Length: 136
Image (cartoon, rainbow, N blue to C red; front, side, top):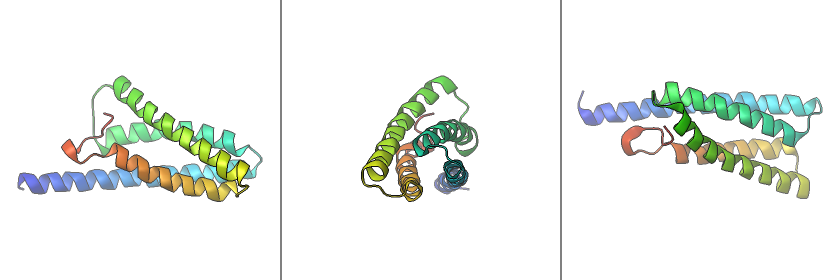
């Protein structure tokens, strides 16, 4: 297979695996969010706990499976955490504004936030250059 076709195939495979990891993780975590908040756990606390779990989970899956990176975890995880820390703050600020201030239902707001931030993170994490995970 020519080099160009091999690169395109590799890129497609990475995008597919990234999508599987992201969609599955976000769906499961959002359903857990709905379940836990339905049983009375505060929506901001629930988002915080599940965000932390999702951050570690997706880091490990994307590093090993999506991008098959075998480098050191410490430096890449530090970079990953700094980006996800900023995204966490965006998520919390959006909840505070749309739910606490505008009084919109947290279930819908968090659902929209999950989709919006997932797209944003995909664009930040998957540069086309070198076909590598930018944090790894």
